[in-house]
Length: 220
Image (cartoon, rainbow, N blue to C red; front, side, top):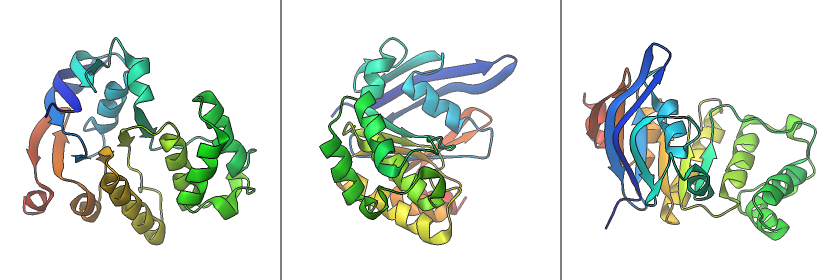
């Protein structure tokens, strides 16, 4: 089976800084790939290149679409949760879900279904500014899933959560993988990587240091 994501010789420079250099890898359908590496390794930049929202050198294909030339089509097939979640604080949970549903041409019924599915039904009248970190992350996940994308990109999705919320969100990722989603996520937590990832792509100073299994990473 052809990979759902293919990256060949990916390069990205910012002014005089090389963020990514000659990075190549593939991701199969329903696979979970963890991006591992210290801050500044190039993980977030890689996600943005996959989405086609920044320029880059090399070749990226997502569902056989060229991310550089067909970025808009790629983004229709990808749900993205950035590390810094920016939502309208003066909207309620329900208003927020409906706002993004309208942007994506999705029905309010879809919003309603997802809020119930991810445990936000009772919080639908709450204002975003009053939500806990875990609830905000769940709302970001609902937004990412509105258009039923086959691929999810998540940038440090549990970095700002308490232990309970972190465990809940890690379990949510397992559920999504079980439902057939393809996942690429950044994480600094070995336990999270071992629990969710099929493979690990280790980046260091913009270079691919290695690809390995999660259990092998722990022994290095």
